[in-house]
Image (cartoon, rainbow, N blue to C red; front, side, top):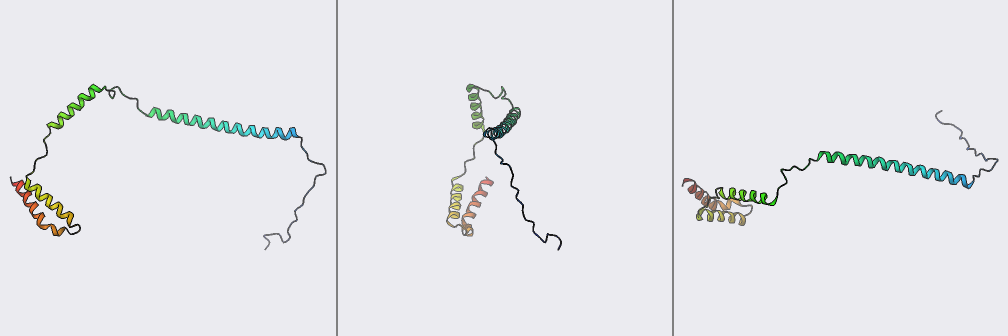
Length: 140
């Protein structure tokens, strides 16, 4: 109530008394001016993006450390280092050799677990044999 008009206004159309014709030269000039404006804007945006990407690249390059002289080595020095590392590995104590009975008990236990998936309690006998072999190894 009262918020809207009770009568709808009729739209009025005014027809000009004089014809509105533009010369081809004026239309062409306006069209070329618009095209030039768009091209200039695109060029400006491209230059701005190019400057930003160049600056980002320069910043990234500054963050990357320069290669040091210490890292540059020839193949002879690398070969010497490899030989030294191999010698160090050979000097380390080897894995202890286990008795054959322990290896057999271990293999039997593993095989039992594979055969009885989900039923590990079926392998109690093999587990006890393995534990006995471990205890024998620890007491010696």
